[in-house]
Amino acid sequence: MKKYLIKICLLFTIALFYSCYGVNAETSEIGDAYYTCRDKNAWNEISNEFSTNQIKDSTFLEGLKYVENHFLKPDYIIYFKSNPREIVGISNEVIRVAFNPKIFNGPIDGLTPQLSDKEQVRIRNRVLKLLYKYECPKGKRQILKALKEPAIFGKEYYENK
Image 1 (spheres, rainbow, N blue to C red):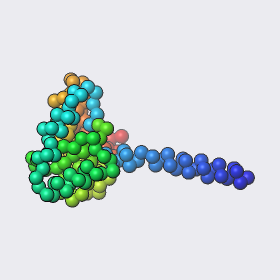
Image 2: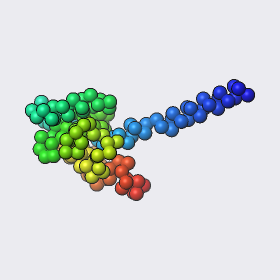
Image 3: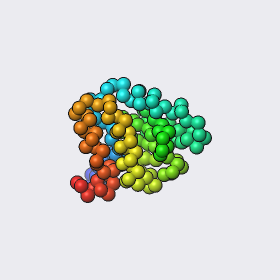
Image 4: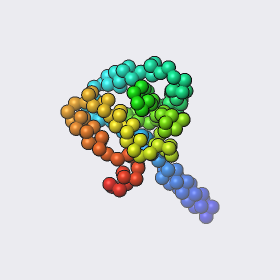
């Protein structure tokens, strides 16, 4: 009987763990940036054009540290110096973290309560528009469709499911 209870507890613990696995990974994303046939140098070219080396402002230098050291560890970090000024971190083809002091004076991800669905879509679309020129025709069609999508896991996302 004791072995049976231990097995049940172990199975319950494993089930609980797997039911929660990936929740933060999914909902913490700001948006998806994966499309089919992008030029392999796209992120490097975008990172050079929107380089964080252009940052001179102390607020954004601090924000860069937030993005660089975020637990999601971006592979690429880009800086938009045009309004709205912001820093965006991308890892594994997903827009993971951003910094925009007009939204929040800290790292922003999909779990940040200050990040509205509207702002989440704006950040995602801003990055997708950069990627557009690096895509094949099929990828461009996918991006044009994605630009119209609601924020991932936002209210409108669930209404359309």
